[in-house]
Amino acid sequence: MITTKQRAYLRSLANGIPAVVTVGKEGVTESVIGNINEALDAREIVKVSVLETSPVSSKEAIELVMNGIKGCEAVQVIGRKFVVYKRNLKEPKIILP
Image (cartoon, rainbow, N blue to C red):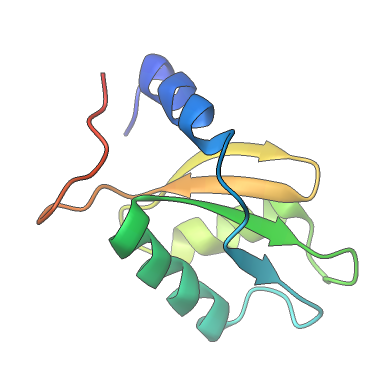
């Protein structure tokens, strides 16, 4: 569980990164969760875009992603985008305050 200060720090980091994964018209599928998990292993913080044609909202999508990936934390949801964080235990790239 991350603290409020850590969440604010992660939000500031996420401000400058582009959306890496897109949730499309099929919603949050196993392949989408797999892509997010791979990106989290490489980057620790991932921004995801949810298309308007998606059957789920951003809030529903982030819940599904957090249930599908163990240790995944929600950072923020703004409009059609959301940000998730998962600490890489082997090679941490982000040092939380």
